[in-house]
Amino acid sequence: MSETQHFTFFLLPEFTHIAFSCALEPLRIANLVSGRPLYRWTLASADGKTATCSNGSVTLTEAGLEPTHHADRLFVISGVDVQSHTTAPVLNWLRRERASGTPLGAICSGAYVLAKAGFLDGVETAVHWAWHDLFTEEFPDVRLVRNVFVAREKIITASGGTAAADLMLHLIGKAHGQDLATEVADQMVYNAVREGTAAQRVSVQSRHGMRNEHLKRAIAIMETSIETPESPSLIAEELGISTRQLERLFARYLNSTPKHYFMEMRLNRAQNLLVQTEQSVTEIAMACGFQSTSHFSKVFRSHFGRSPLVQRAKIG
Image (tube, rainbow, N blue to C red):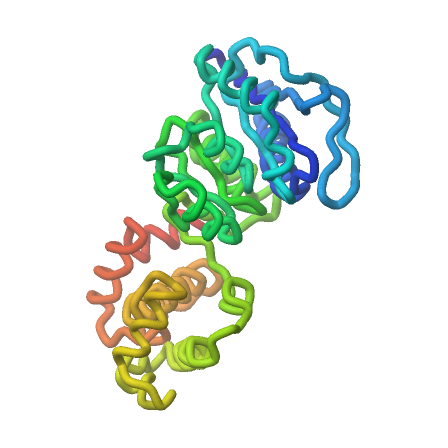
């Protein structure tokens, strides 16, 4: 690999500007703070002239559906109404690029385009949570995950929004060292960088439109009892339903169990406290409902792949 990596960003009409900016800006800043041309990029669109994003602003592009001349990675960035913008010429162009050996990637609903081309069957894929139901129905062979991004597959994907920044910081760290990635994140005033294993955190209101009152109340109880966790049976009793009914709600709407969901909530709270406060590990363990610091450290390491102390040192 040459020192300068070349990325092509293919912008479909109505692409999301936040995902595009979060993908491009870390590369620009990496060049700036390193004092070296580590990255260059080409903006492409179907007509090779402009791309209009979902907020109405227009971006000038310099390439169309011609060969990318072996870019190090071709990213498809989409957004609103991706189905109507996934045209035969675009799919045929992507197939030619893949056949020529160009590595592919997708950000936000760009994964829909790659799935439509048949590239994601059997591939672990991150896509914005709002598209999960559609993917399940239309692309049953795609291995959907709720992670913010997936970078260990040949085709890398990011779920959208600020997840694009997380992905690019990961790629910068992998290619040029974690110190540079950290410096780029500092320049972005981005102190909550997520790794690929992090889940997309979505409010129940957004994900389910608050359609199920019992689920809403169950999660509210969990949020107010993190320091002294209540068991699923006690939560169910407060709601006036059976424990089995509660388990079915979590399975149906969240693809989880009450116990697992509550544990994830507590561990994410602990991670935030490690990053945002100077409380000791013992204090944080107690604040998140763990009576034993050693047990907390063991569960934290199992979930995040590192100990609480390493987590704090990594962020610091």
